[in-house]
Amino acid sequence: MITHKQLTLAEVFEDCQNKFDNDKYQFLSLLDEAIILDEIVPVSFVSHFHARTGRPHKHQLYPMLKALLIQRIFSIPTDTLLIVFLKYSQELRDFCGFDVVPDSSKFTRFKQDFLSDLQSMFDHLVDLTEPICQKLNPALADMTIFDTSGIEAWVAENNPKYANRIIKQLKAFKQSHNLDDSYDPYKAAYCSMSTHAASNQAIQQMYINGHFCYAYKFGIITNGLGIVRDISFYNRDFLNAHPDIVVEKKSDSPDEDKSLADSKALLPVLIDFFQKHPFIEPKTFLGDASFDTIEIYKSLFGDIGFRKAFIPLRVKLSMERTDYIVNENGIPCCPHDPTLPMKREGSKSHLKSKIPTMKFVFPKMKWEYNPADKSKRRVCHYDDPCTTSSCGRMIYIYPEKNLRAYPGVERGSQEWEYTYKIRVNVEKSINHFKDSFCIANRKTQNEKTLHADLLLAGITQLINVIFISNGHSRIELIEKKEGTCKIEFLTKMNYACPYHICYEVSDITAKVEQLKERKFIVVKNREKACAIDNREVVFMYSKHGGLIELLSEE
Image 1: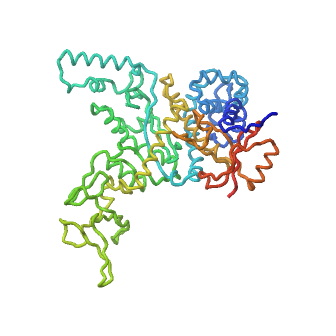
Image 2: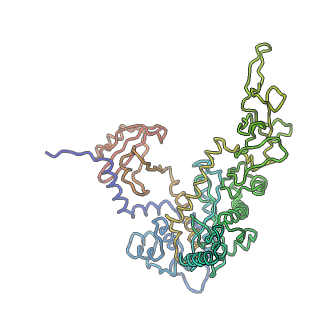
Image 3: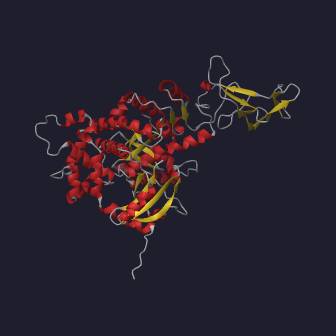
């Protein structure tokens, strides 16, 4: 007698994973149907490509673009490896539209010759995806997050032997001259190194991820969703257009020099971005402590029009001409006891001019009821009051007079703590570009090629946004945590990948019975999904259909 065994979710996942790994052609077909290049590629790009050059193009525009996009979607690190895949995969050649696979020089020449067109394509996609971002989450879409990073160039200065040789010489110098510990060979090495590579001044000395390197610097803007909005590549043209952002070494600290350079680059990048995209009007800015200067705050609120700025304090706050002190969050404290921060009370202006004000009251003040006249009044319960008023000290703050202390939001508040955590999304996007899209570790020092690769990474991310937003489909992202996993087969996942499709049905009971007739089996009984508004779901599996999820309609 043959016993029937119901597959576990772990076994189901293994089968689904094999299907995903071995059936890329179906994915390519879906991608080809969902992404219409005629709507994505600007007309100027097509016109420039087909302009008379003296001889016809051997490889057309769309096949070249598709190949470069596939390179990033499948995380193919080099053009050489991409060519190998194209030569040995008929499916990839059919998707791209190649009869003959281009050689490496053709891809390089394409990126260099049409760099400005790739920039136009990227900017066009930013405008196309903005309504999608607003639909996904308006609050996160209205956030602007800025950060800088670098792409290490293939130059002699990045050879570890280069820095080690200098440090070794300075250590010998310290020993021969009997210098004390105040002389730091590492700081001296940093000061003695050139600010840029000998082969190209645009390749700047940087301090990235805890180490020195010579890299092409770029600035990136994302929204709160982590979707890229702008990429500024700090090449010769950019630096010539913004000469004020060039910062030579000012100290023996790489962190200090990086912060100074980042602070100078912020406003030019933001101004250029909003000029290119006038219909994007974010309300909130998020950045690191390097932007904590009064000039930046005034420009963010005055010139650009942000309403809130989440920037950690770099230097301790100070209030001029006051008889009280403020803590690290800008909250005024009791003049007689600096350990007692005052309480915020109300947010409405008490002035006829309606200038925004913030009212703080003494923390030991309480409202007490007077039975005689049936009224309530404030009473200060402190042994050493700083005022003769029975209700205690009150302090009115005018945020516009000190934007560092009050950047549209109260520092240390729940809103501050929750919102500032979102800033990490820009760092995730940078790491995604470098790792998944293989921007890092490129063995080239050609700035046009690196710039094009960076733009293609941004284009790929934005195309993914369009891809997942087509139709009425949604993607549910699940992160595996340490400990018990509620979805058992996720414990076998070692990397990110799709594992099933969810279908919304009107009658989940009837649909389960219908699928059972088609040889589907139930692998996870019906239950309420907390991530989908507590709607009922059931998981089913078929050898030919794979793992599916049924979701009841609202």
